[in-house]
Picture (cartoon, rainbow, N blue to C red):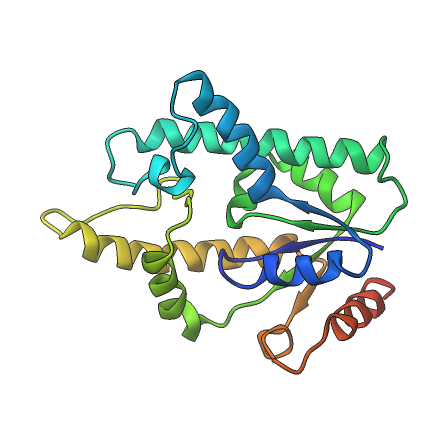
Length: 211
């Protein structure tokens, strides 16, 4: 079985993909693969030790747009690499779980279609009433975020206030995109239930993907 976990940053994709890996699956972490390529790029500029989220900054940071473009370029390369290995390489027909980033939805449509053809996409859903929790997590543990033009402060609006308002709008936009590209939607009450085991999840996914 080869499947891809998609959803918001902080929803639990890495948590579950690591548990699935412990069951003998090959795990592809897009975050880790991007970070590796990112290190090489920064190494060329003498900044290899810089934290990825700190490097990207906030959408109002001076060089954010350039950083955003490079990040998406690296992510596109990483997902292409994964697809190549699944289609032509050593992982063909082997159990695989792909742990994606929250910005997956911004990649080229042709690449997303290819990933969906090679794997089944499983959305770890997040109810709207959890958006505030996601934003607080983002503030406390910053991760690189692709805003893709969704940071639109009002004239005279405080940057931090604008960040919170626009982040919620970003989540709403992404939620629609995730749902459109998912083969299966896994309910929050299931994947966030402390009693749900990795065996439960694999059985649930396996049954769903056979439908």
